Length: 114
Length: 112
Image (cartoon, rainbow over all chains, first blue to last red; front, side, top):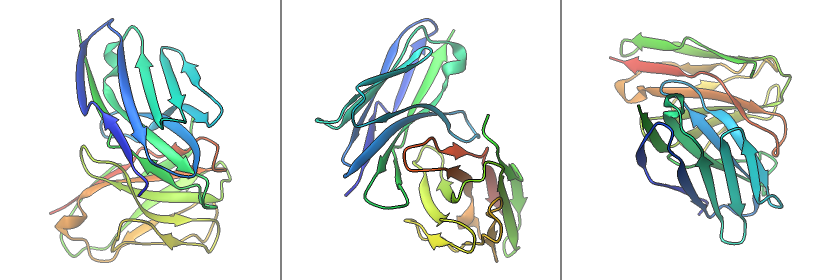
């Protein structure tokens, strides 16, 4: 069964600190892995997208890593800001269908305190 | 900035009413999707479309229906709303399997 598991479920950090969110997946055949940021009551917004051959990708203070062998990914946030408070969702796409089906994790709810 | 729009953003409606949630995109993408998301839970695919006159049911069973008469529009309809339909509905589109998926802002539906 294609699944995406994220940890931790929730995380509280102080402004300026770094944090790392984890994602494990069993989606096969793998096409790509995406990290999205979702503010409360809004739609997800893309942070990074990585294919099989990419190990790391950065977008400002966000750095995503991918280990396709162990089927694990992480999202590292550097020097957190209050505006980083949101749910971070790991999404994996398969290449076994023309649809390019997306499989969603439940997200990690990040809260940044001043 | 993504050019995909959903209306209304919020809707409170009585049981038994018929409603239509609108979704429009200006990117010319063929593939469009409807997801349902409950608080703290993952997104579940309820409908998708490969293009005009193409609609398919997703993984999560839903009593809603969709139509795709034009590339730009992918409305979702509930013929008779029930409290169990209370949820957030997200519309999305992307060009190919390896490109970014764009999401609308979502419609928060409450059926009382």
